[in-house]
Amino acid sequence: DAKTTQPPSMDCAEGRAANLPCNHSTISGNEYVYWYRQIHSQGPQYIIHGLKNNETNEMASLIITEDRKSSTLILPHATLRDTAVYYCIARGGGADGLTFGKGTHLIIQP
Amino acid sequence: GAVVSQHPSRVICKSGTSVKIECRSLDFQATTMFWYRQFPKKSLMLMATSNEGSKATYEQGVEKDKFLINHASLTLSTLTVTSAHPEDSSFYICSAWTSGRINEQFFGPGTRLTVL
Image: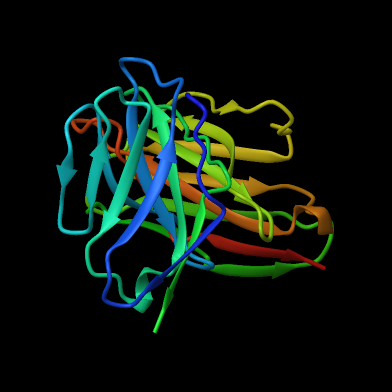
């Protein structure tokens, strides 16, 4: 798995868009970018993943730069329930375990 | 999304006893399940990979005789912590990989183990 770098923490006001950056400069061509989040004392929750193109689902949008060396997860209208640790993981397809880094602790402020 | 359950959600046991944790995929079949461990304020660490009908593959440093894993069906994997000691106290989380999608893993809610 390619190494990823995320800021340790971020704050965002409730109702605003939360933009979480991730650097994965050594990502290889067949590796996807995955995002998971973990709310305190719960199991991680899958959010979204992508290879080259930007992706959107009901939870978030994923913007991947053209050179694929970085990406941004966007929560369009953050709520207090979005407070969690967000993990960016770069890896290939296949049934392999995930390598979690330290993630970004996102705190949504009322 | 796919649902993965774990039982029990929390367990307290005495040192030296064994504890079994179940992981079930409720609405899909999982050929591969994973077990992770998370210490307080730390990230998840992969312990082992469990494939239905075959022996589990353990990560380096994880004692296979201490953490027994059984994946007898496509919807159930169990982790047994044998002769538990206080240092085994942790948050144990399983995940299941759905075939047919590109490696989406769905996680269970976790089991909090406290060994006295």
